[in-house]
Length: 246
Ligand code: 13P
Image (cartoon, rainbow, N blue to C red):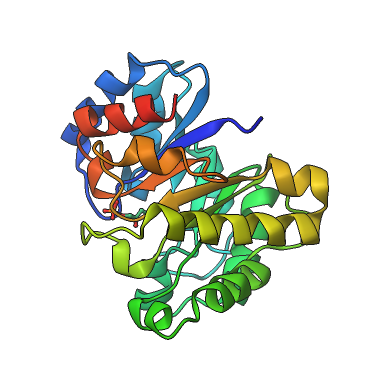
């Protein structure tokens, strides 16, 4: 039985005053799901303090593969861990597009996350053109293979399927399309990491998850919760999504 996950990705949004949003989430105290919130790096430490003993896991949105060094503007996995983070999103399509991140780099970052004791949330997803060309499974399969290192376990890795064309657009794949991709990813995880680990790893869907569609998406087979952008910024919306994962 896989625990559901409600993960929020604040992206480049949020000043200190936004931390008040998590008060409503603390009250939910989901016993049957994991709640992960990934604010910008500037807020990780303060959010950890604000989260207190609520059980909310705070995560980063990226990390460098090195522990320290001359990498101006970057943040290492150890720094996130030092700030109290327990997880980090890696290989988000916005980083792949804006910063040219490759599968090999995401793979190195994932190893860095594990080195620092962080749970990695590794993202894969096809563009609209790739879907229209019938390449969805080939693309996400390749991204999964390239971005996840040997040694992945259910404890150190979560995989998020985020179709690029569904992010921030209000459009989502049909439930059948979501199920097709998640079944495929499950099969690949089992083939590579074995029955036990492959069946225990959580697979999240991301891309325009809202309070209105969360429950039906989370009910699709092999969907173990969501990675939520816009709707994670408002506590009332994210709280309904957390409830849908409960
Ligand atoms: P939206 O929920 O805003 O579509 O963003 C999804 C996402 O990119 C989460 O990482």
